[in-house]
Image (cartoon, rainbow over all chains, first blue to last red; front, side, top):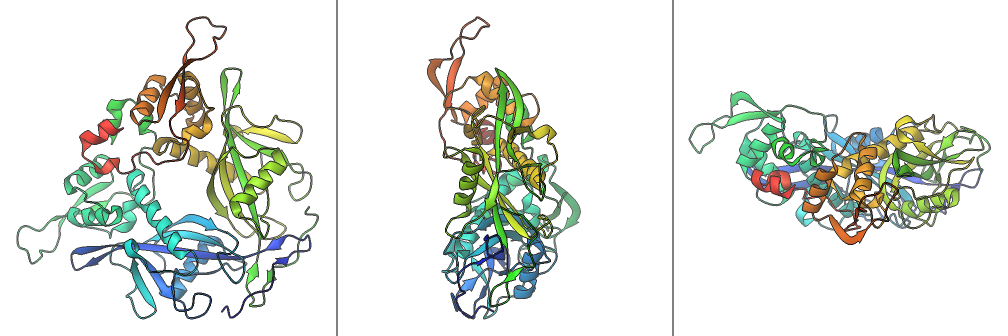
Length: 249
Length: 249
C-alpha cells in the first residue's frame, strides 16, 4: 500500500541506484453482447489510493524477490481480478522513464495477456472491461501500454497464429470473423479468413455443429484451432519465389 | 565496479524490494571478409572482474536515476565500445529471473541494436565480434539474449523493412543477398529478393554503379532503401482476398 512519496533513490554499497520494479498485465479480450461483438476490451481496476486515486489502472504490482517477472504478473492478475491460469501471456515492453510514477522511480514490465472472447470476471464497481477504441484516462502510462498491447495483437494476427488465444475451444467461422473484425477495426471476409487459415493448417472442422439459434436455418459448423502454442506463420515466405508465396499464404 | 556480493535486497519505507536495473545491448551486424560474408556477429567485451571474470559479455551497465532505458543502453554502448549515435535500436526483452546475476538480483532490459555490415569498432584483446552461429560461453544470460536478438532480426526480415538497418547507404543486390543469407542461415535468390523488395516499394536504384572489382565485367548497379524508419510490411495482407495478397507480396 503506497501512502506517501518515497525519499530519493536507494543505492547499494557500490553506489548503484536501485528501483521499484512492477509487473503489469494488459489483459485483452473481444467482448460480445449476446451474439454481437462490442470490440476489443481491456481489464482494469479502480485505484483506491493516490497517486491517481479513483482512476482506472491495469492489474499490476511489485515484483517480489523470489519470483520471475512472469510469475509476478500472474500473481497480481489473480489478486486484483481473480483471473488465473489459462491466459496466453507474452512480454510486451518495459517502461522506465523517470517521472512515469510521480512518487518514486518505478520500472514496469508489461505483459500482453489474452482471454477467449467473453471469458473473464464480471465487471463491478471496481473492475471494468474498458473499450480499447475509446479508453478513459488511466493511471500512470497504462493507457499507452494498453494501446501498445492492442497494436502488438493486431500485428501478430497477421504473421502468427495468435488468434487461438482469442477463441474458445470450438467456434463458428462467423464468430471468428467477428473477433478478427473487432481487433483489426475493419471488416473481414469470413470466406477469405476460413480459406487462409485452412490453407495454413491452423483451422480444422470438429464435425460438430453449433446449437441452433433463434434465427432458424441449419446450425453452423464448429471449428477449432489445430495448435495452441504461438508460432510465426511461414516467416520466410517472402524470400521464396512468388508462386510459392501465393500458394503458401 | 562490482567487487563483492551485495547483501540482501534493499526495501523502501513501504517494504517494497528494490533492484539493480541494467541496460544491455545486443549489437548485431553482418561481417564481411573482403567481399565474402562471414555471417551474423555480435559485439562483446571481455569482463575484467568477477563474477564471470575473463568471459565475454554484452555491452551493459546500470540505469542511472535521470536517464531512460534507451539513453542508458546507448551510454553504456558508447562507453564500452565507442559505438555512438547511428545505430538502429529497439527493445528486445527484460530478464529478471532470480539468480541470473549470482551476486545480487539484477533486472536487465536488453535492446537489439543493428549496424550496417562491416561497420563498428575493430576487434582487439578486450573487444570481439563473436559469430552468432558458434558463440562461446558468455557471462550471465548474455548468450541467450544474443540468440533472442538474432531470432527477432530473422523474423523481422520477413514482415518488416528492418534490412535497411543492416545495409550502408548504397549497396549492390549481391551484397544485400549475402547479408540476408548470413542472417537467415540459408541461400536466398538475388532475383527474388530484388523483385519482392521492389514490389514492396522498399528498394530503389540510385542510378550509380559500384566501383569495378578485380573480376572484370560491368560494375553492378547500386541500390538504396527508400525508408529508414521501421515499418511493418502490409500487416493485414493475409486478410485480403488471395489475388491481392499475391500482388501485394
